[in-house]
Structures are given as structure tokens and as C-alpha cells.
Length: 217
Image 1 (spheres, rainbow, N blue to C red):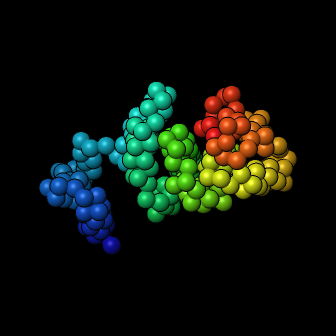
Image 2 (cartoon, rainbow, N blue to C red; image 1 turned 135 degrees about the horizontal axis):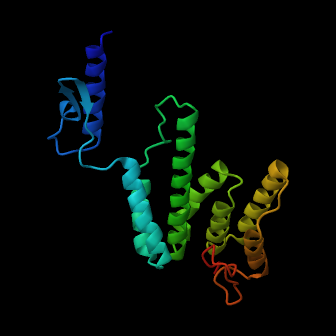
Image 3 (cartoon, one colour; image 1 turned 60 degrees about the horizontal axis):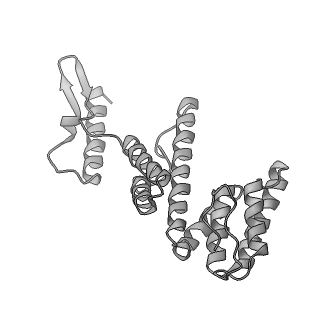
């Protein structure tokens, strides 16, 4: 195939992406991939990439978390995460350097997800979170923060035994795969649940003093 054939195919892909992005219909592939005297010029336009928009929204969400504005934090982080439609660069053959960037992006997504769930817990949305957290702790069996959030959501939903079982599963995974015990923060959360009565009872104990997890009761 000639260079012109590749350019035509690339413009078809760009047109598809523009349609999928729900733009105003004013831009076409020829506005993005221009023909110039010296060859071709890729013009991104004045808009931001999905990555930059994700980072902007996530940053706004993090600042709202720091200010204890949990409704704003949950909304902005949810908006940021909605930009993800699958794994980062899933359709791209990744070399060593690109793999590093993919891991960085995935870690950024996971951090935003962690904080969005934390904000939702602060807003009392524990029952709505249970299905999502069940999937997440299965996907990330050694992720302590997600496990802690799952334990809090289960406990608040009156499922104290399941919350304690979640801790034991995480501990078994960490010991078996890494030879490590759960962190002191998570161990203290487990002790809080052990020493507490039924969820919502006056004897319910709060979260660890570090405040890493939303309160148990």
C-alpha cells in the first residue's frame, strides 16, 4: 500500500473517533490530519486529551476530598472515571516504554476509584457500593484499601460476619503470596468490627484514628 492509502485509512479511523466522541460535527478527519506542502500535519486542536481531562477532573475531586466536600468529590471523580471505557491503550501494541505509561495510567485510575468509593462511603452510600466492591476485591485480591472499604460497606449493611471474612481472605492472600500481614490500619479496622455490636448500635466503634477509612458505624 502507498502512503496515501495509509493516510486514507487513518482518516477513516479519525472520523470514526470524532463520531464516537459526540462532537459538534464541524470537524472532520481532514481538519485533524492536514495535508501541507511538506507532507502531513496532525493537529490536535484546542481541546484536551482524555488523559488530561481525567487528570483535571480527578485533581478537582482530590481537592474536594481534602476540603471534606464529599458530594463534589464523588461527582468529579465519577465524571473522571467515566472517561475510561476499558484498559488504557488496549488496542495499541505496547513496547517497554509504553507499558510503563500504561501502568501509570492504570494506577491513576485505581487511585481515583479508591477516592470516589471513599467519598461515597462518607455520604452513606454503602449499600449501593456492595455490588461494585464485590467485583473489585475479587479483581484485586491483595488491595488493602478496597478490602477495607468493602468491610465498612458490609458492616454498615448489617453483614458483620462477611466483613470479617473479607479480612481473613485478604490476610490469607497476603501471607500466601507475599509473606506479609495486613497493615496496622486494616488490622485495627478488623478489631473495631470485632469489638462492635450490630451495625448502627451505640457500641459501634469508629474507624482507625488515621481516618483512612470512613467510619464503621
